[in-house]
Image (cartoon, each protein chain N blue to C red):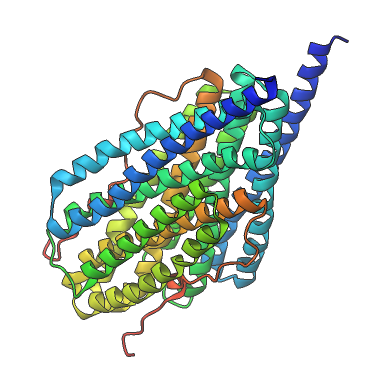
Length: 239
Length: 239
């Protein structure tokens, strides 16, 4: 076996290990996104604790994968797509960690919102957002492992659905608040919860863009339509 | 000049360049944090455009610094504190970029909020949050350049002030909403604006922790007291 072949194999093994850890991390985060909605709908407060525990493991994995990626860069000095694969792994884990953080934040609020009355179909709408985000996470991580740019692009565009649902829910919740001041506290927390899912979608989109970059060497050049309009929504009392 | 000395010098030069770019980026972000409040208070909508423009440069700098850091890792194979300095630069720019993003988000909402009536002293309170965040950004970036762990720790703890102001403002705004439904839309946007500053404080804290790690080789072990309590705040109509 010549020296080059040896180096290539070691690099491949290293990268395989990174991939395995990224998959473990993504699986945990996806479960958190699922569980935080269960906290909300089923008033399952034990699950809030379990999400916190899983968050510790997610943080550990972020550090572990980060350290490993840096070690690979320094020791193996990869080039071209191999180099990008390591750099992208670094960025993926930072985005995944953040998605987990948002899930933890939703779970924390759930313990307040469950004490309050459910409003219209807002819980179902939030479930729907969560399902799309979970599909997106699974999809972009699969596209990373498969090094499939088109698959990454497909999931990147799914974020528009999350944004559209978010816009509608935002308006709906503002209306409930105006109808009855007793709804205000619940709605506030629901608005922040919905915003958390919208941000999860954004971070998953970031990962998809990174996978696109990893495979092609360039970020996608079609600026994805910005569909989150809630920062400019006003609801008129007389409308 | 021996080979080792040459390598050290090149590395130092590279790191100096990274530092200079990080300082430029931090300066731009600090200005964005300042300007987004001016958008809000002075109804200066031209400034919203200027923040967007500056955001493009911030994104460019993030990419530039990121590419440079990776190149240094691969080419110079730094060790110990030198290695950490490069890795920390990578994480710093990702946090700085995010702070800029939050400032942009505040500026976007400002164009809505300015059409609406100011509420109590909420504008002044938000100015105060912004000033502390700006001080923190300047402080942690100085501590990075000075490689000063104690300075980093000092600024890390300042985030508690941001969180306390945020908690108080959160309650105040909920009260305004309950008093008069006509306040609801403004308050909603102000709540999201306040939340954005609270997140900026968190990201600056992340940078401070990274500087601590760069200098000492370990993250701070005192888990900073979590002072953001807004996710569990409920305001009772009858209280």
